[in-house]
Length: 171
Image (cartoon, rainbow, N blue to C red; front, side):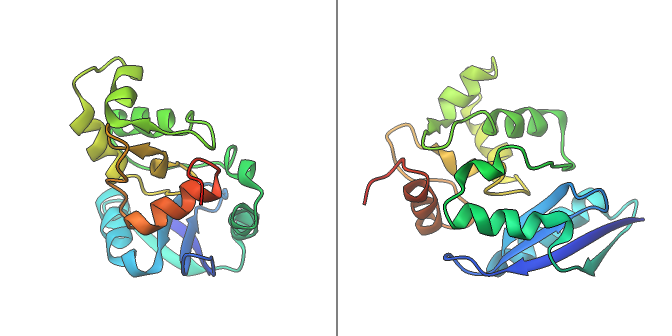
């Protein structure tokens, strides 16, 4: 059975769940009001083998590292370890997301082209939307082709705040 160590931290955008395994690899990062979505993803990926959620204060320092991100240490998320379940295609998209530099964005079509899958923008968008480790796997850095703030499970307002925080959008 998989043990998930969980903590909830305060952020400028509201409470954030931080879940990692016992090796301190992130398995989920999700806004409190989207807890149902997080539980659905956990169930999809880990119900068969079984999992339990155990309250833990600052597991592996992950909570502090995410607090530091919100306090302005933007690069701290770049090397945080993750161990998310998903399809090979999802993993390919999530890895590509981590290659988008802080302060930059791509649109879904560009990301699909980077993956050698021109024309697969919708599939990339679907994989982006099922990312269980938001912020760390920066799905907020993908925008619509025309520059619109589309497709962020945490809400467009949060996406805009994160992009401003990272220096992409100016006030």
